[in-house]
Image (cartoon, rainbow, N blue to C red; front, side, top):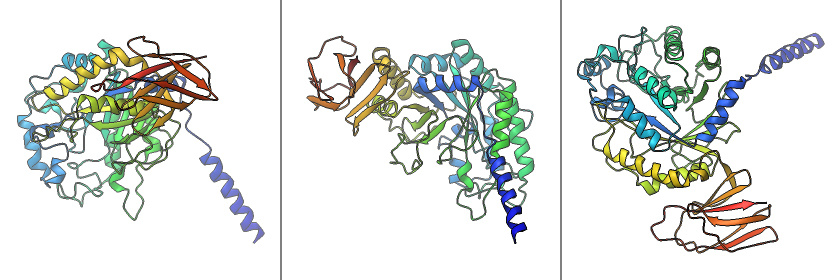
Length: 431
């Protein structure tokens, strides 16, 4: 009995030792995390073969379209009006610091010149590498490029289908080792042939999260491959869980961290850099019937709310099949850029300010400067706890001084907010 206990103890020690071999990010990775956390606004691009159907990126699954029939759309995919320079220029003018592009969504179609699948952009009438054009333009204009990559594939029969894609292909030919090699070969291409990549953004872990038998995605080895190829490249996974070992950012889908209005973000908030991804309308991919775009006011206030939680906003645009961006999206991006030109110092490179009153009052902070964002025009007085003494209070963008009182750890001041104001920003300089 004692010998068995000793053996078990030895096994436990070995197990603890094995678990203690934690992922250690490189200095380049830590620097990129810092730059990412200061960026605050990124643009998400959901674009693939699905745009030709104009029914959103889940059309193949939702309509149970046979993958072979669906693939025939490749012969008509001709985004002749795609202009990488116009895209990047518009996103940069909007104040975005990075772009996350869907290289391969769940439909399985690759938007670059990959040698590992014939189901790619080079075999369309268009015949040009979209990822390369976008990468070259991002590098030229000095904006980071992140690459979305799907763990799911509704077309390839070697992908062992989980709860999606069950009506699109044969399910009796699953071969996980083959599919895993395929994914890693594609990731190697993306991280070898397109210059510096800011992050790999994974999606699909949840496809197997309800199975009674645990599914091993072999993420540890995949994350190591990415970090070996580009040590500075960040890894994120939209799995709706607390971050896994080897991840560098934490993603929240359709929710500000700490909220769970969409039902996808009940996980704890980690110490990693944070990102909220959200749509401009209701769809990620282009849907011809979805013209219900959020107003510029809503989008700016969403950016403020995410910044107030110390998180980035990854705001989605779904390009049209011809390669152009919807006019409604471009209008809102331009207006966001104009607002950020004036108030950007209260957003970029800030951290959570430490005080908020629901969605009415949000605070961000950069060093000894506190920014109080008043999102409700009915507010006429602010009284908030503050541990540091105050040197000056003024209206950001105007420089107009505000009279204030600071007593017993409470800052108090009155405001007169115009009815049409999106965000009345008060700059508080601390001693």
